Amino acid sequence: MSTEIAPPIEAAPPVETLPRAIFWVAVAFSVFQVYTAAFSPISSQVVRAIHVGFVLLMVFTLHPNFFGRPIPGLAWLLGGAGFLFSFYHWVFESDLTARAGEMTQGDMVVGIVIIVLVFEATRRMMGIALPIICGLFLLYGLFGEYLPGALTHRGYGFDQIVSTLGFGTEGIYGTPTYVSSTYIFLFILFGSFLERAGMITLFSDLAMGTVGHTRGGPPRCRW
Image 1 (cartoon, rainbow, N blue to C red):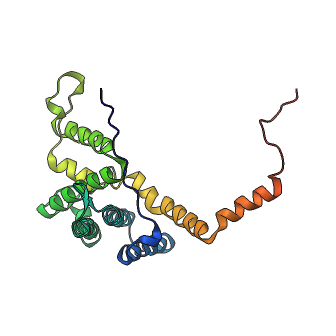
Image 2 (cartoon, one colour; image 1 turned 180 degrees about the horizontal axis):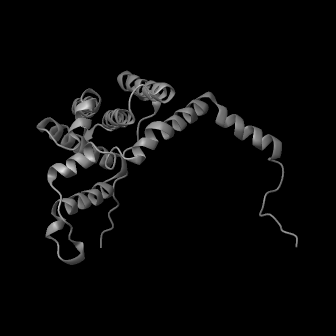
Image 3 (cartoon, rainbow, N blue to C red; image 1 turned 135 degrees about the vertical axis):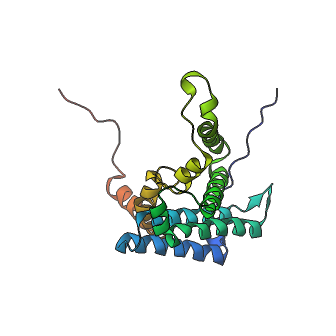
């Protein structure tokens, strides 16, 4: 009986070894997030979309392997497509709001591409299990009306699913993306600055220097 172990997920390279182009993409990502958090010049939906676009670009360029070998050109092409398509929400923001779910051909293309890229980026970062689970729920939305008994639902069109996932605030651009684009990214960025500046080591040394000589243990209660 063979016990095969799944290959580990590829880790991102250290900052010192990053190509200069990826480094400047990360800088632009950080500047965009800090600027939008400080001044709020654009709507929340646009911030979420461009946030996802930057993430897609970073994921594909940091993990450029295809079929077991790195293909940087293809990685930049896919990541760049996800990044450029994210501006669709900004350029056509008023039209998307006015149409309120009525999909055009351009909306369908952008929505499908973004959904596929998000699935692939998730597979690269988290492994194959999560995309499979999400894909099963996606299939349930498409074909659940044909299931028997309590599993059936009223049915949803393909355009409804693409609209919800790719343009609404209940799919890709839901609450987790909102929190990531407003709070989580800033906390991670601030923590990275502290780490690179040596503040984490300073806090650890300060704690060890002040109370490191005392014995630890569970607290004792006196009744």
